[in-house]
Length: 507
Ligand code: XMP
Image (cartoon, rainbow, N blue to C red):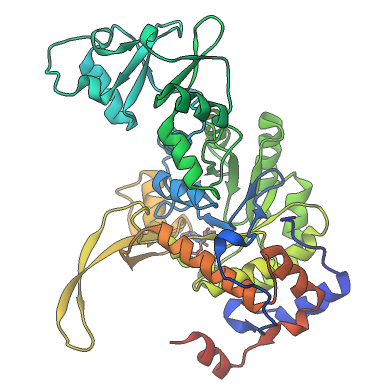
């Protein structure tokens, strides 16, 4: 249903010739007879495959960049039906911070919380308050050291209690006054119990009374409000995390997997390399068939190489990114539309999806990326400057062109992951000078992006525009748009002249 359609070899090769050397702004698509009565993203199938084992309801992935995706961004993306990939821009050996970002996402919205925050009855209320504030949860499950359930402690129980040294046991609601369920149960059954017994929290225990989970009404309500959210089998939001191909990458992957990450992205600038070959081999040896995306590549040979080494999805894009200078500094890369198309043809009927990574500067390019070859799209700069993007807001003076008045405008920083600034932070080399850092091979830059609202609004706008593209394309779903396009690309594809490009995309 959500798979990329079969492409006839002769049609594919002829179309590839037509897009050689081209990128998104070199084309526009010819409108077809529309069949959609309404352009409503909630009623149009936009589902797609992120990897061989993970399906998304929306084809949007936020990039693993340290100025784009940490837990707040990943949460919004998963709630809106896509997924966020936590970047690997943490210092080597310092695995904890990246793991914590994954844990925050996995604990954000649950069906059944498998490992709820818990505290011992003998702990002080001050310790309980500290745990609540650290974990940002308002209810702690009280358990003995062996895991036996003793009660629940909520924020309300400790409100207005001074620093008296009182213990959790004194303020908790004890287990004999709680409704407790023995064994596992589905979110739907949990909801039934909660409605019947008029409760908001339902702890789960095994036959011996040991805690095995917690269900909260808040989580169930949020689940229902977000029908497109990307969830794992336990109802938790899905999240990915990036690792490199050298150094601590295997240890990092192990910790991330233990924390519940859903997919690992082995992400290096040039994925068609012996370094990648070794990393993928070691990854498979250590973690078996755990879902793994590998990249980046931009050629057919690069795709075949990653397929041979067991990628569950392939990230395509060398040099199109907004914060990227690879092409300028090396003169290597492939224009993104050509890259997507040749990689799509190389993937063939392997069933391995493509993540179209980078170069999407306007919403219309999302439809192009998804038709030309991407199963999903990965975006970085499109989400920079949003509330959920990491980093401080700084105010800069800007001169208004009309009035020549100077005003303070809020900005956030977007930086390429191979920029001097990102490398400096990652390697913890505060004192290194620019020349030393240049020697490390910077292929990215830092830019200021005006601070704007929530990434949620941006995703929703993108989806509305994608649905409009589907409507203009005469299709009723994303998969159908791809199928119609690849049946006869000539009916859609218009190559732009310099002046028609100006007419189309310059405003
Ligand atoms: P957009 O265009 O959405 O692209 O901002 C996001 C993608 O850009 C890539 N990226 C880089 N590429 N040097 C590069 O060559 C860099 O410093 C850099 N930082 C990010 C990356 O693939 C990301 O997903």
